[in-house]
Image 1 (tube, rainbow, N blue to C red):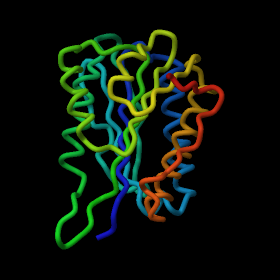
Image 2: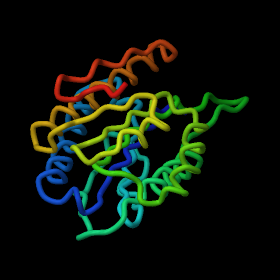
Image 3: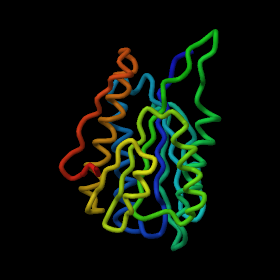
Image 4: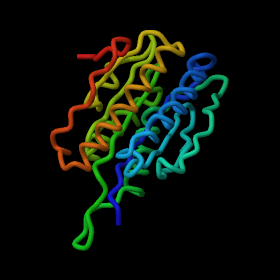
Amino acid sequence: MDRRLPIYLLIDSSGSMRGEPIQSVNVGLSAMLSALRQDPYALETVHLSIITFDHEVKELLPLQPLESAQVDDIELPRSGATHMGEGLNKVCDCVERDVRTATADQKGDFRPMLFVMTDGAPSDLMDFEAAVQRIKAMKFSDIIALAAGPKAKQEHLKKFATKTVSLETMDSAGFATYFQWVSASIAASASGQQNGTADDITLPPPPDEVQVVL
């Protein structure tokens, strides 16, 4: 059985993303899929899952091969809470359900990657704090969190992410650049895993529009 590289995207779909931001995210996701399908390493191993969170959490795309993944546009509620903690718990549930572990007879999947994107802060703080501990124990190879726009609270993301980045402008150009970097990062991980350098994968540096939060 072929080893898979599971990629999870957890995306804020609260009402504050309405308008150009969510339209840009939808375009960016489509462009990301197209770019990854041009990469032979990614096409061979990447399996993609997309989960959204607002006042409820939705598994928009259950984990499936890159080749067959079809992503519907993300639709937003008019308003409501931002249940990031519930979203992180959902990711953990999906990883426990989806990712194959090694047995005596077969190798398990490659370590999964997680990309989280939000333009705000968690409304469910108690659930969030518990989810932070759970997500950190899941053995992701990388957890990259994006704080999008001026209202995103970076300090929450830094609690669980291996790398936190920020995007000042929530316009089409900014999100396009961000998703190009996500594509390149996934492709680099896919290449490194297959070439046996999983413990020494260097992801490409983010573009100038995407600032690393120290």
